Length: 261
Image (cartoon, rainbow, N blue to C red):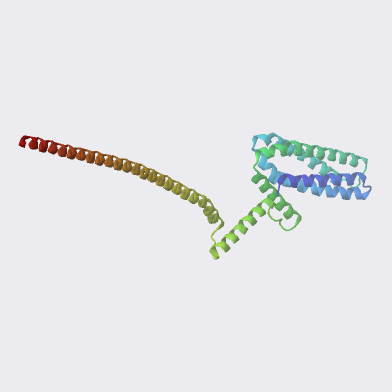
């Protein structure tokens, strides 16, 4: 429970009772005053035993807390004096008005200064814990059953319990825990990325091999063409040599024939 909201609720209740005191008459005035007295005594008890001790040490709230203690003393003295009266005469009503003014001044300083500084000095968890303690003590003083945990704590506990149940069911049916599912979901993209990288690398390798094959094919083609050229040249050379040989033999035969004649 939020400590500030708990105390503000008490402040509003006391303010309403002072309004009732203003319009009440005769004995009813004293009855309303007794209700105010009971509310203020319980309220100051909660603040002095639980709330203020938590604000005494922090620098932002130290001075304001000490001042609040002193204001409580004034209120307690006025309550004691008003309680001793047997009738709500003019003097009593004047003193009751002073009590109301002191309480309203105290509330204004508390809500506008002390609470604001306390929010800076305390963590959210500390404020909730103080609220829970004051609510429990208030219930104890009134003879009421202890209130349930603060909404924030209860919600957190419920979420934790709900998560635990789901995890147990998931494990039982073989689906794995929520965290494992998340891990698997996170790993999946990584596997996809790895596969993609491998495919890309294989594609590059294939491309290189294909390029190498083409280059080798071109080289082989060039070598084949050169070989064919060399064979042609060799063939031509052989033909020429043969032709020359035949021509030389003919000349020799001619010369031999001429000699015979």
